[in-house]
Length: 127
Image 1 (cartoon, rainbow, N blue to C red):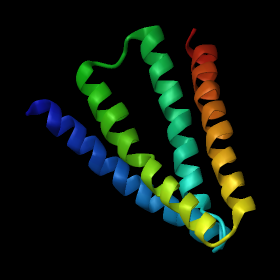
Image 2: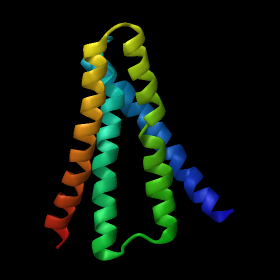
Image 3: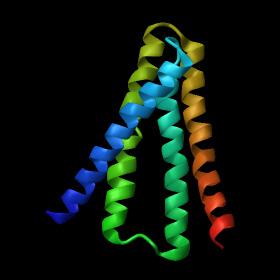
C-alpha cells in the first residue's frame, strides 16, 4: 500500500507538471500544426530519467521509495507515450505525412539523445 502512495503522489505531480508545461509550450509556439508541447515534455522527461538513473548508478542516492516516486510516478506521468501516439495518428489521418514522420523521428532520435545527454552530464558533474 505504501508503494502505491509513492507512485500515486509522483504520478499526480507528474501529470500536473505535464499539463502545465505542455500547454505552456504549445501556447508559446502558437502552433496548431505540430504538437510541440508533447515533444517538449517527453524530451525533458528523457533528459531527467537519464540524469537520475545515472546519478543513482554512481552514488546510490535513490531509495526504493524515491525511485517509485520519481522514476515511476513523476516521470511516468510527466511523459506521455499515448498522447504522442495519438497525435502521430492524427497527423497521419490529416494526411500530414511529413509532419508525422518528423514527429516520430524527433521523438526517437532526440529522446535517445536526451537520455544519453542526461547520463553524460550527470557523470561529468558528479564523478
